[in-house]
Image 1 (cartoon, rainbow, N blue to C red):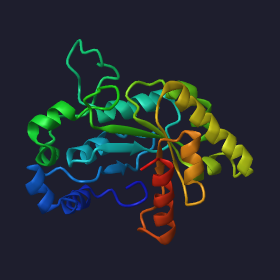
Image 2 (cartoon, one colour; image 1 turned 90 degrees about the vertical axis):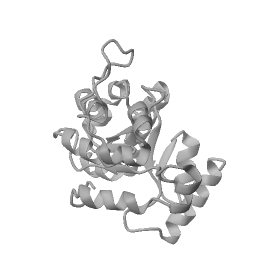
Image 3 (cartoon, one colour; image 1 turned 90 degrees about the horizontal axis):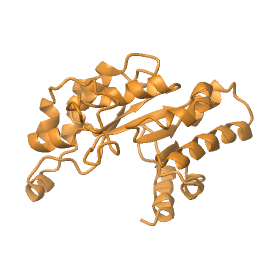
Image 4 (spheres, rainbow, N blue to C red; image 1 turned 30 degrees about the vertical axis):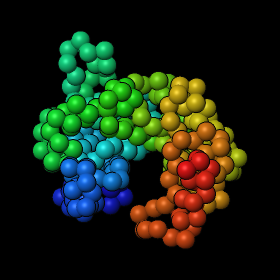
Amino acid sequence: MEHFPFDVERLQMFLLGMTDKRRIQQKGNLQMNVTPFVRVPATGAEQVLFQAKQVLDVGVFGVMYPSISTVEEAENAVRATRYPQTTGAPDFEPAGLRGRNPANATWFWGVRDYMQRADVWPLDPRGDLLAILQIETVEGVENVEEIVKVPGIGVLFIGPSDLTASMGYPSGSEVEDAIQRVLAACLAQGVPCAITTSAGSVERRLNEGFRFVTVGFDGGISAGVATALERGRAAAGR
């Protein structure tokens, strides 16, 4: 939703379209067979709280936050993904800011399941929500060794296109050096690192240590995307 209208009602209809009557009968619940994440329009420097709250309330399993460049922005993103925690809880910080009214989300997950699982993984081992923070600016790369230490981050996702633009469109080797710096910071802290890939790069990225890759775009599945999926699954041993 970053580059398209922020239409939560349309997102809700999209999620409903992902339900499968046969699987509902088999599982006894409405939980989807895929894991939907949403990239919100607001960047790290903007107010992301209301956008995160709205997409989480309709039932997505994670939020991708664009252009996270500082520790403060990273903390705000994690806080926007969490409900306030019980006083004295070992995982109280970063303190959650999300307001409680997950009516549509509990319809998919079940009320009891949602209230137990609607927190960020891996900070809460029971959590099923993922805070995905995008590193795609020069400032973000320069601060990545501190950003990656923020509790509650599920994934750091490198955006090569915006990163290249932020760097002033330098040579490919300079961009690759920045990508490798982010990857190294993630590996050092045990935080999954993600990146966009293609059929020609997906195997290399997985072998380098990336644990989360994307291979397509909003336009649909093409032959190249199908090839990238096949190669990625083979490289990951699936």
